[in-house]
Every structure is written in C-alpha cells, then in structure tokens.
Length: 119
Length: 422
Ligand code: SF4
Ligand code: SF4
Ligand code: SF4
Image (cartoon, rainbow over all chains, first blue to last red; front, side):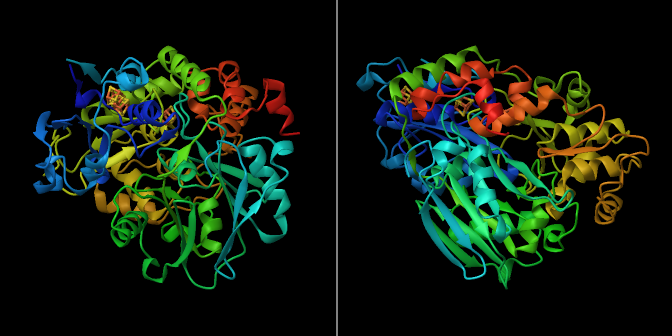
C-alpha cells in the first residue's frame, strides 16, 4: 500500500504537506513532510506532488506520474519534475502511512480535491 | 517565534536600515490579526508605518487560512487601509518567523526586506530599480538561489508613487486596491521577500488539528470564480475563460481553487514544463476578470491585460474597470493602454455610480460593500481566513471561532470581533 497522486486534480493548497508535517511533529510547517508539492516553476504553472517512500519517490507529475528509485532524482533536470527544488524531500522521513502516529493516512484524509489515494 | 499568536514584533527603520524585535505587550488587549495590526499602526503612527501582518490561523490547516495583510495610510483616502496577502505570501510570512512587521520611515535608496528563519535583512535594491514585478521576482529568486521565495514587490507604477499602483505577489498582482504599492514606492521599499521554513505550534495541537480537519472535510472543494462570486458574474467569467484554462489553483490551505491559470502563449493543455517560459497568467482577481468580461473583452486579450497590469504593478481591479470601456485585442495596443491608465478614483467609474472606499478598498455596484461584506473582512483579517471563502459559505465564522481556544488560548466570539474595530 502506498500513497499515489492524481496530479491534475491537485490545486496546490499544500494541505497534504501540513497534515503530514503534523503527524511527524504535532506542529505545522512545510519542512518535515514526506509529501511535497513541486511548485518551483511558477511562471509555467508547472506543479506536481512528490511522495517519498523507503525505496523510491513517487513523482506525481502533471504530464504523467512515475516512481523513481532514490538517488536517481538528483541526476535529473528540473524539467523532468525533479531537480534541485525536489532535493529537500530526500533528507526527510519516508512515508510511514501515518502508522507511527496511529492515524489513518492524513494527507489522503485532508486533500480537499481528492488528488491523493492509496493503492 | 513558534506560536500562532503575536509575541514580538519586528520593527524596520528604513531611514537607518536597522531592524529590531520588540515585545508587543498590548497584543492581548488589541486582539489577533488585523486588530493587532491596527494597534501597531496607531502606536507607530508618527513614523508613517506600513504594517505587514498575519491572522490567528494563518499558515495552519484551517480552511482558507492563507491570509496575511498589509496595512498603511492609503493615498486614495488619507485613511488606514488594508490589502490582502493571499496565495502563499501570508502563510510564508508567518512561517518565516514574523507574524507582524512594522516598516517605518523611508529609505534614501531602493531597498528590499528579506525575511527568513527569524532573521530580517534590509538589502540594497538599486539593481532592481525600474524593473517590473516579474523581473523583480525573478531577480530576487535568482540572487537567493531559491525559486520558492515569495516576493511582494512593486513595479514602475509603485516606484512612481502613482495612485493606481498596487503591490504584486510574485507575478500575479494582488488585491491591493488602496494604493499601498504606492506607499511602498514612497518608502523606496521595492520588495519584501519571504521564505517560510519555520514551524507553528498550537496551544492544544490535537484538538486544534482534529477540529480543523472536520471543517476541511465539510468545506466544498470547488473550482473557478463561481465558487466565490456566483451571482456577481462568476459563472459567466468561468465560461468565458474556459477555453484558455490550464489549471485551477488554490491559495495556501484553501479547499476552493478560484484562481485560474490561463495560457495564451501556448496551448492550454500543454502539461510538460518544456514549453515556453511565460505561457500565460494566473487570474487571481474575480473582480478584474468580471469588469473585462462585462466590457466585451476577449478572454485572451483580458489575460494579456491582467498580465500587463501585474507586471507594471497596477491595481488589477481599478485598471480593469478603466480598460473595460474600450475592448482591445492587439497585444501592443493592450500594453500601451495599460501604460496610459489614469487609475484615479474618478477614472473609469462612470458618472452616477456610487464609489465607496472603506478600509478594505473601493466598491461600486454591483460589487457593493455591505454589512455582511464588512463583517467577513473583519473576521477574515483577524483570523487569517480568506473573506471570499467566508462570504461564499465555504466555512462559517462561528465554527472558526471554536478553534481560537485550542489554537492559541484565545477566546473570541462574533461580537468580540466587531468590538475589536470600535
Ligand atoms: S500517508 Fe502519512 S506519512 Fe505518508 S505522506 Fe501521507 S501524511 Fe505523510
Ligand atoms: S492536499 Fe491535495 S490538492 Fe492540496 S496540494 Fe496536496 S495533493 Fe494537491
Ligand atoms: S477562495 Fe480563492 S482567493 Fe480565497 S483563499 Fe481560496 S483560492 Fe484563495
């Protein structure tokens, strides 16, 4: 079971980041979540959602989602939905489906646009 | 700063370039958000203050909790006026470690304020002088090597302290209809740049989070302007923009996505980032879109006009109102019409229409101010929740007030909010 993304449903509210950060820290921030919005190319309105797991990164890119093994992302250019702006997630905790907090997956629960699902 | 409520306040003295954090002992008495902002405005009224602030819930998972504000003396009225910091700017300001910043005096040379990690720097902006807001945003992000920095900047209109100047949030303009962009220009404050990498605590985190999640689950997740201004032309504006729509966008923590990205320099359905650098415009102002639609503009031309106004740092609403009388389609003509906007209070408002300004901006029929509208603005700016979402019924004030205790140990009711403004 893992969190997957329907990228074109996402509207960029960052609530998944807040909810995930809350399950780790019991506080609100954009720095500790295992799920992250990719919003670095603002002028192009290019936006996706990245989820870090123990093995890979799920890249919810608007042109089509894909999973990439950890370590591969740094070699990619920004244009492929990864690049420098996605690097912070590499040093964060991997998604534990919120089990450590005894909660159901919070990002899925809070996403108002139903852009996240479990599979 | 890790609390949701004000503790210290950052004072920025532009005449010396110095910053200091000082206690704000009156915070409890004043109340949160805009109420605290108004108290700070009064306290430093001798220094021509421009107050940047955020609300009680700004930056948390409460529906619509994106809202921060800029408060200063509007050149249009000579009275205190407030304009919104929406999208990510309000939340990132609070997460940068500053929930209120008072900018005093003016600088001899152009400067910008850089807020991050609880640190505030006044930096030289001589190299940014004359740049439009798109160039300014790009230049600051490039200089800092960080593309997620939020940039509240002024363009040529603000630098020239024109009455129609507005600050822009990144590339997309703002809801500043009170010429606070002109106030920034008079202070030689080219921009405020923010990056929010901090953390916000709640008094009772579990209770607060659970209640916020409940409100979020109950809030409708709608898209387009009909969600927030059905009955004021929102439905028609959506249908008009539809052929150009790339995606709908939410502000931070908003279940609704009223902002609409339209592409006119490449096909709207291009999803890869490999296309043109500047494919279009994020339409954030329902009112600006409404005026252009009503004036008979084509959607593409309207997108170009809003882009042009945002670049120049011109109030989208007053600019669109003035432009609406003469629809254009040629990009060059649109740019020159935007350059020629008067943007005075009188220009563009047809004779006989009642223009009313209050602390939240100018209003004319059919977008007339009302008691309901004022109440939503007051509650929204105190709590840090988008007034448009409140007005549209996406979340109600009474439910939000129930979160004040678990958020920050503050007890407030609706009459309490009203009393903060008397
Ligand atoms: S399931 Fe939980 S841990 Fe995993 S990304 Fe979502 S919120 Fe974070
Ligand atoms: S909560 Fe949903 S809509 Fe909001 S940013 Fe995350 S995936 Fe996108
Ligand atoms: S209703 Fe629209 S303007 Fe208000 S916070 Fe939501 S997306 Fe932003």
